[in-house]
Length: 383
Image 1 (cartoon, helix red, strand yellow):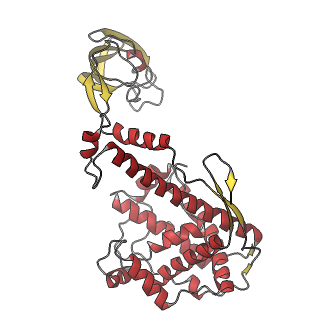
Image 2 (cartoon, rainbow, N blue to C red):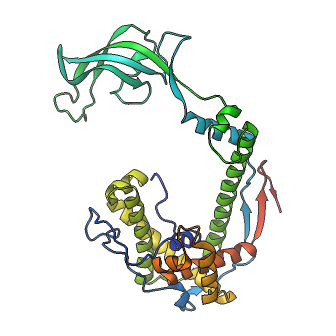
Image 3 (tube, rainbow, N blue to C red):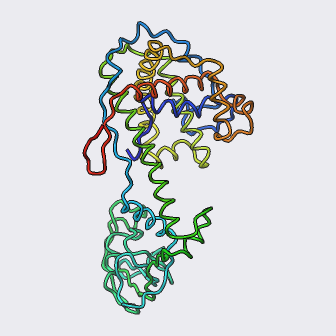
């Protein structure tokens, strides 16, 4: 699968829950009926971790002093260089090639072409002044490779065969000849990394290459620190899971987390103006039925791990009081795009938000009580 579909860990749930549970929202009709991801309105959860008694559901094993390794967050200069080159590549422009007259892979060529089957031009096989990126895979196999080495102004005949699976039945598996004239050869020219380029990026406080390098370094460091913290939490919760015995979660709790994942996916699809089936395939590379299966499997793991986190919270006296809930709401509503705390509270399920805070507090507790060895850039561990 292209991407991980659902986070079955408390660390993921703490994030996912904080953005869900909205009340009375209109949700677009999905193309799939009666499925786990089909909703016509967002429902408020009827089961919350904060009110669950999990004493008989979880037998805790060792959860303090878990030995884990935290990945290095040191950003090498080569990573900074690669990032800047990558972003600059999106601002490259095509320019005529002047130091050679033959086509190379990666060039963009302007061509005239005519395709014939049995000596007769076929529909859709002819074009003038067509811009083709060599290596893009736009044309059938052999077309683009056949132009590599061809000179500007030269005309060549390409003897090719359409694939058997080609949609047009009259061309599927057919032998054809494309007569192609290369009229222009262009290559992508990347901007020069200098102070003028950097100033044109419009980044506040960034005027020079050195400023830009420092900004990129700080951004990458933050990303690596966030990833390292996430992986650290994952490692700890997985170790505690292995040490503990957890009973089968209730169907209601499993469905809660299936609904959470479905709701988040539905919102994402709406944001991009897609139906569920299109969005799921575009992002995960699977059909909707397989996605639903993954949702259910992930929800099972999520429910088990949520029970574990609640058991630890009970054991350690971690409780999210109304005062704590109000404090977190006031700290976060603006960053989540709300004009006021009251607007935020009106738009979410507060008890579900309380759950997310509880999970977050448990994760912090586990990290604070773990034995963490940090990996440096050489790959060695140090305390």
